[in-house]
Each structure stands twice: as C-alpha cells, then as structure tokens.
Length: 327
Image (tube, rainbow, N blue to C red; front, top):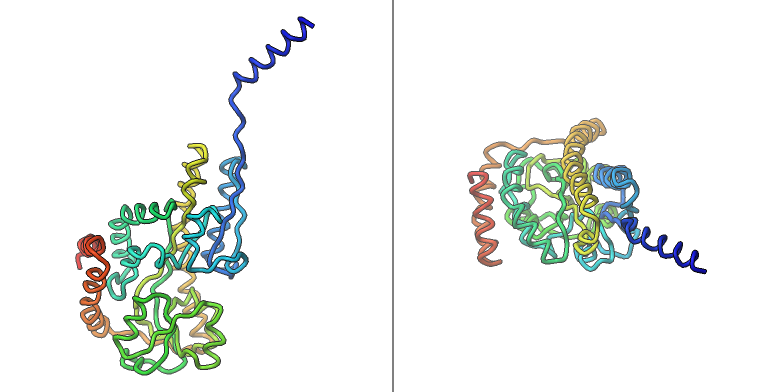
C-alpha cells in the first residue's frame, strides 16, 4: 500500500509539472458570398486551410457560404460580435460600423494609390469602431471600382435620369439621385429576377463582382468609377483573445497576407471579365475625364454634409482621409 501511494504521488507530481495540452478550437466561419468560384470565397478558403496547417490543427475553421446559415448579409458583423459565428468576411458592415462608409463615399477615392493611403489613414479608427462591436478587425480586401451596368444604353451620366438602379449603400444611392436616377436596394439574389421583370434597370458593381453572374441581363457597361466596395475580415473578440498568443499571431499574419492577395485576384479577374463580357456582346463605354471631374465637384459637398450629419468623429475622419489623399 505504501508503494502504491508513493507511486501515485510521483505520477501526480509529474503531471502537475507538465504544461497542459493546448485545446484545439474549431471556429465557425462565414462569408456573405454564395458563389464558391469568386476570388472572395477562394481567399477565405485559403485562410481556413492555412490556419489549420500553420497552427498544426490547434485552430481550424469550417467556412459556410452566404445564405447557408440563418444570418442576413447586413447582420454579419453583429453575428460575429455576438459570438454566433467566430470569423467572417463582411461586405455589408456599413449598418453596424457606419463610420467605415467614409471609404465608400462616391467620387472621393479615385484609384488604387488613393485607396491605399486612405485605408492606412483610417485603419486605427476602423479597428476601434469594430472593437466597440466586440469584433477584432484582422484585415480586408477590395473589389475593383464599381461601375454602371444597365439594360439601356448609357453614354453619359445624364442618361441615368428616370431609371431605376440597384445600389448597395445609401452613398451609392446619393450618386444615382444626383444624376436623376432612382436608387433601389436589393439583395444580390434578387437582382436577376428584378432585371428580368424591370424592377430595376441597372446595377452598380464590378465586372469581377456582380456582373460576373448577371452579365447576361446587362448588355451595357458605362465604365464610370463611382466608388470602391470593400470587405472586412473579422473575428469575435472573445474567441480571438482566448486563443494562445502564438495562434493569434499566426491568424493575424495569414489574414494580413490573404486580404491583399484577394484584392489582387479581383484585379486580375476584372481584366478577364471585362474582355469576356465584351466578347459576349456587352457594349462598354469609357467615361471622359471631364465628366469624372464634373461628378467629383458635384459630389464633394455631399461628403461634407454626410460627415457633419453624423457628428464630429465623422468630420475628423473625413479630414484625415482627405489629407491622406490630398483632396
């Protein structure tokens, strides 16, 4: 009996001296996109695969496509903050984190260089704004410029007058209204039937975005750069903080690398889709520099009004962005 007690004590002492084995985590991941072949979904799959491999299975992710969970696209950030899902890509975050919409104001950011400067200037504000929702902002990616796809010929912005155009934000809606059109907000799944029935007569999107799936309904593309659309790569703050430090660092690194990679994939796919859509018979019309300048001057007062309406924090954030891009 004495020997047994001694042996048990030795085993217990040895077990206490050993570090506890790390508990593997399996996260629920979600993306608004329901099309597995898009650059966005491919990128999210790469993140999930890399996380599993580079953490030796200590963190794994199961990615669910848009509409496969009972989560509305506009509620993704909230669902992450509430812990319903652990990780996500969110394109429709503007309702939950409205200050982020500064980056999407029409005619404010005109090219890739300006986008990079504006995002870098806004990033600290974005991190804090998502943190208020119990969400960690890990990175993001950007779609190519949003241009005008229609069922009717467009050679100038004046041709939008009286037509119903699908938009994805109030800011895009303001642009359409500024040129006499009627903005309509619809989910992506409603677009094809709405085009067929004449509920809408056009959309603002990218060739590698919505137009990749809806091009057969949209014979005209006016290559006018209205604004950029972007997605945020986010995680639940509690789940993230509960991870071992090394795992957090690995996840952060992967998200920071894959966000720009998705953006680049979209940029390359945009070229491919423009060529394919033109080959299939779509009429593409380039916007003139003069009209782009005119629209910028017309929308500039709206930027200021939008910021002032939302409060001092927005006014300051807009100033930060405009200073960064020299505009």
